[in-house]
Length: 135
Image (tube, rainbow, N blue to C red; front, side):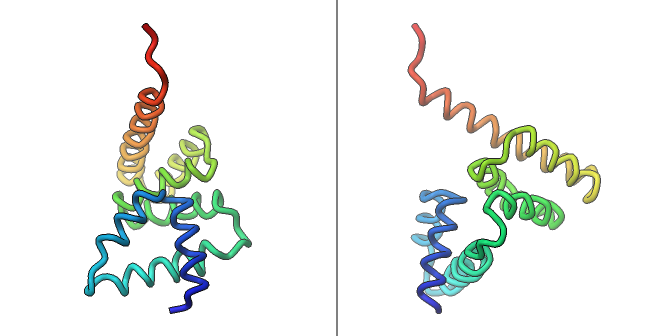
């Protein structure tokens, strides 16, 4: 394993998915799946996301389309959160989801909108909870 690329990958992974998710993934790694977690961190996040040719926002848009096409909604949810964290507006997210629906099929679009609405609702609730309540 290339330690430098792993370190870059862990930083990028944390920037997009958040510390809590990465900490849980690494904490849950055992002797069976640890090599896979290292591969994901070094290869996907270090080599791919560590390449500065595309900015994280662009990579997020690409990932939304590819992950949707694969029908991997658990990963899609993770990357909707990441795309928003990487600066995608709600309007841009909606436009990307409509394009996904056209190119991947309406049933995939339905799933993607369902997941995105869930994420947006959770984020809205969290931001509301963080603000002081009016009396």
